[in-house]
Image 1 (cartoon, rainbow, N blue to C red):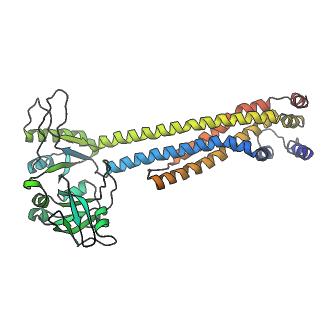
Image 2 (cartoon, rainbow, N blue to C red):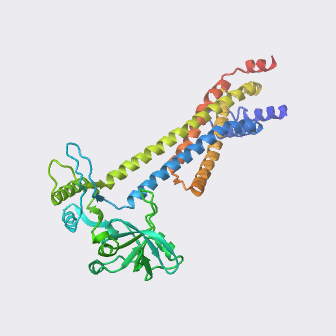
Image 3 (cartoon, helix red, strand yellow):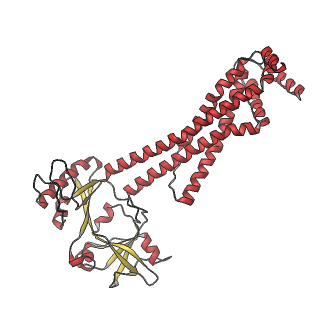
Length: 434
């Protein structure tokens, strides 16, 4: 066995093959020999790979979870609408001003005053949501019923799956028509097209004609199902669901002409509403304006920081894996002192010895990174399928993990390879024979 190994080594390191540089006649046999050496110590090689497998898998999985969470937050915010300001009749504390304890009561005049601002493209409003029992000839359930106007759907980025919104005539005549979300459609009309069918809403079971169905939006920022909703004309809501026929405007939605005008539009709206509400100069607003662009940026930055934190924590396991490779390679060098002495005795250069041990470390790190990548991807699939955790893989995280694994292979194998390369043949053979 030893004789065949020596003959093979003589052929590889013959003067005709040992040309300067790393030309294929020298480099490829070194790769093959590194692979053979790892194959003869599979348990040791696997233990060295284990740290890299765990490290790469952790990085890929954690970054995927962080990215998925970031995208989920962004989708939830974007589902509210683009370039959108939301005005609530809730007092907010303002430095230097007395707190306004009287919440605003919005009227049609407030809506008109906002609509006339040059920085505002469109305005809509919604009434206070009222949870009502709903039923069809097939099933019954409960859903939030909201009164609004036709412009609401365009401002909120609602896309119709079928049918259309109610019209100005429906508002004027208080017609009993409804636009329903995807969850309501599935509950009341499983496997059927709800368009043109009637649903009964409330204790009095008032019949409403379904004139439109909305595409699914999913869970909102508050964790509620945005699709378990029914929209009716604001005047109809006032007549059938609002207590004492009050307007009950819950929110005003103002779509700004562009994201560059968000701050200007906010100031203009505050000034217009303060004038309409007759608020003294030393008193704070009795309403609150939410800027979704700033909220989106804050939420996105927070999610990105969270993703970076997860990736950084997971990267520690890659460092541990590199230490494991270095320890294993140092032990390997000690165990293969005789082999190193024989190689050098028959003509192997220090550079070739160093390259071979470096190749072994790189092969360990490369195979470990590939297996870790598969493990991380499988873990992400399981997290999404079993625990409903949002996962999104990105090319940069995969590339980063592979590059880091290759770098770890080189860095962790450098010292053991250098230690092997500096051995003198006579010292190596004498150490073994002693």
